[in-house]
Length: 180
Length: 180
Image (tube, rainbow over all chains, first blue to last red):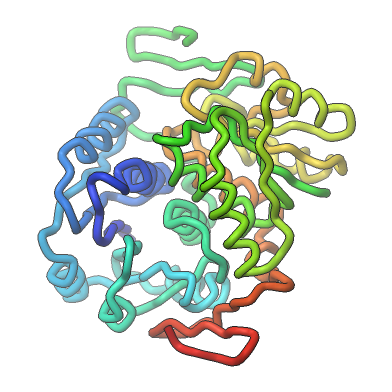
């Protein structure tokens, strides 16, 4: 099952860091790629591209002129999960989402999510019914979807790799190991 | 076991939204309260206070003049977990952290984390060894620490409560139910 993440209504000025964190979390927790609507933001795309090139894997990010078209195109062959604090509790629906073999588009709101998104989604899912962050909601959703297996995934083809350490930083480069 | 979150080196201009998301995630995933160092930011404190007052629970946020003093004071009676992509993998250490009955301070980095933090921490823990976000790292760490039980916690004393819904928004107010 491939998983992509669609971020709605990105505002290049206000949302830059949160949207960057969102897509880095998407990548780290096993999504194959991302899309975003709203305002096109080349520096966001560059940041995500640079992380993928340094740290491996094939996560890509694309701008979508119309979230509506993106969701409708996706629904021709895949299913849509919308993360919202107003949806059904994660634990009540995660098994059904996992058991459904179709590819998933995980839609994550921006400022104000149009009601149409709630109607288009196959699942509206809440990760707690409390206000927090699209970054934490996405990470915990993907962590549950993957049953934690993403924690052990190695990303292929990067330039850098962390060597886990009890009390310091250690990073391996293709050309050898160095401490930073 | 009480859990508090300490955010290092908050910059009021750059970090406002990410730090807000971080503390809202801390609250939603079961932490009792937060502290932050760096630049004092009354609007951050107000946002977090307003969420707690609207949505219940007793999460509080305090500014700390010195992260070093805060960590050292904590260590007199509790243990310190530092979340960093360079630390030991979550799955390798989470059981030991859970089994240790002392209260936990979860330290989350800002811009550049001083080496001293790695030395002071009882555990340096990585939530994946990939770069992503302190918000996602904290949420997944707390989710694992609580073994998912935080997803079902009801927050007492708030003014608002979500009524989970398949395809829309429904919020209950103390004075009755309304759709927003």
